[in-house]
Amino acid sequence: MQNTAKIVPITPDAQHQALIEIDDVTLSYGGAYGVLALQNATLNIRAGEFVAVVGPSGCGKSSLLKLVSGLHPPLSGSVKVDGKPVKGPLKICGMAFQNPMLLPWRTALSNVLLPLEIVGTRKDRGRAKWADHVARARQLLETVGLKGFEDKYPWELSGGMQQRASLCRALIHSPELLLLDEPFGALDLFTREELWDVLQALWIDQRPTVILVTHDLREAIFLADTVYVISPRPGRVTYQAAIDLPRPRTLQDTYTADFTELSHKLREQIAVGVHK
Amino acid sequence: MNNMLLKRSLPWLCTIGMFALWQLLCVGLRIDSFILPAPTEVWSSFMAHTGLILSNALQTLFTTVAGFALGVGVGLLLGLLIGASPSVYDAIYPVMIGFNSIPKVAIVPVLVIWFGIGTVPAIITAFATATFPIVVNVATGLATIEPEWQDVLRVLGANKRQILTKIGIPRSMPYFFASLKVAITLAFIGSVVAETVAANSGIGYLMMTASGRFDVPLVFAALVVVGIMGVAMYEAFALIERRMTFWATRRREAVA
Image 1 (cartoon, rainbow over the protein chains, first blue to last red):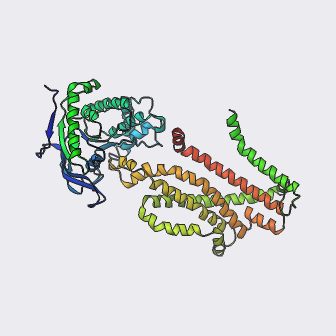
Image 2 (cartoon, rainbow over the protein chains, first blue to last red):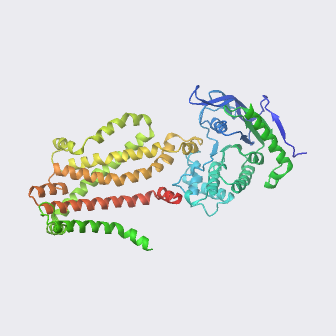
Image 3 (cartoon, helix red, strand yellow):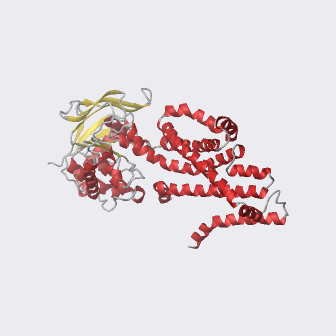
């Protein structure tokens, strides 16, 4: 039975070869006496793993991303990426938010190319390589279904199209680590499901390590290898579930009994957290 | 179609209406041209002194544009500095507001002591009046950037300079170009004011000498020319604004 999923309580034994090790981390906004966003959170993420983090709103899910990307330092505990402590913003990340955050003065293509103007050596950013970059960006836009919209400005695109472009921007520089902060939260259901497919295809193709923050359980189960449940603020990692459904997963799979059972089990875990 | 035509012609109709009303009042109430000359008298005065008015207007245009250009350079630089760094903001802002609160007429005599009567005080006055709105607007544009936009670049390891050039400066451009429209008209006021106090040419100087000779129609002819130049420069910069930052106004249209 490969279609069985396990609900596993958190165990302290660290997985070997973890790309990201978050060890007993507490994080707060506004110093030691500020708002506590995360408390004693411990989790390990393997290279190439697709992780989804779910929990009620305001439970510190997004804080987890700020922590891993190095945008916000922990109050205590340690965050290591590739064995090295995170001291400042990492250079291996791509990030997408609930709001597409495209720059309105740039076309879709130019928006996607933005990371390549920042990362890499001066030579990588030079004229000689630029034609390759543009070709790659065009190809990426084509894979997400934006062929013919490369030269449109963000306001000429629908919300779903902007989010597709935003995904391309997060992936153009082939980041080892892709951080997604409720990227489909503002979209309608049909567009959202379509983009799950797009994201899954991109992930299978590039195999970055992904941390997806979401409050949609179907989304988490459809996309992730491992789902972490975080309790209400201050956020604690209370459960983890390995999702063994075969890939590529289809939308049909989300209506199977296995899938439904999984989401029920996860939903219970979130409920437990709420009543604690 | 009809609406469009009406919208286009409305400013012209309004302007013509204003002059017609003015004419009607002067003729109907038999106002002495020594008090308020009718538009027809202003026009004949303009025709009689065309060369004089235009050469002085050209001088004013020169001082205005020179002062304005200086103001744009300094204003943009100061605005970027203030907007990018909170400590520079704290340090400079009170002094800047202090300077801006001083009526520019008050500093013209000082400028005359320093530079003598002529073009320089007018240029400096134009510069002093034009700079402030540019600084404030550019700084506002920089300071109100959405933090997520910065995060997009920060997770890539971008430094402050990169965030400024990729996001800060383009983002503040609509604010900058909007301020230019205001700044050019203010520069104009500055140079004309300086000319009325301390100059031997320029439209302000012409007005002062004309009123000294009680040639009121010539004063008004000069005033109308000042007004027309102001409108022309404002429109020129409004056009530049639409060209340069179409993405900002288009976005508003798309949302509306």
